[in-house]
Image (cartoon, rainbow, N blue to C red):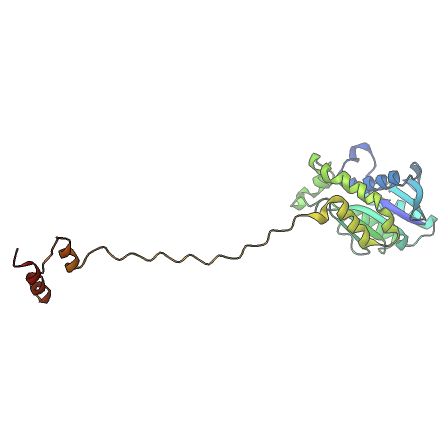
Length: 247
């Protein structure tokens, strides 16, 4: 049996919170693959079905986020499962909104739901992390996480949840890379426009050659009828021969 755990907080006031995106993904998978309706067990809401030919239990702990491990640990022990049989879906501050990461084991990154599951189940379970982005300062983390998704977020949120549900069987088969690739294709993340090629640098324009002063030589001035006769020297003698001894 496989256990898919969506993390969130119970109650309608939390239903649209960023922190509840794990619940949202769990609901989407249950709908897409025609799981049974949710019932109450293990201090959780659970739904049963099949993914990739394997019996699967979807569980949404109703213990509030910080005690998620109480519920998941109880289900794990009841079905005699190992951490490797568990997939946890949760929100992730350190990933850009709409992006996904999938890994087995690792740290909890300060996520209280993961801390609780680590304590009850060990750390070697698979985590599907859904990016919700960081608000930029630690003082704004709680309002951000416990705030509702913005209206603009719906442009990526619903298509992402649908894609997760459509391709959830690939996670069950262990094809993590294939799953992430399908999500990227389905949500358009793989088709982001490439950065335009940088144009080759143009050679700097040659500075314009400064024009020589327009002052004319004595001979040129003389030919234009504007003689400027030096008072003495060889040039004076030559000009006097050309134009005579006029003042």
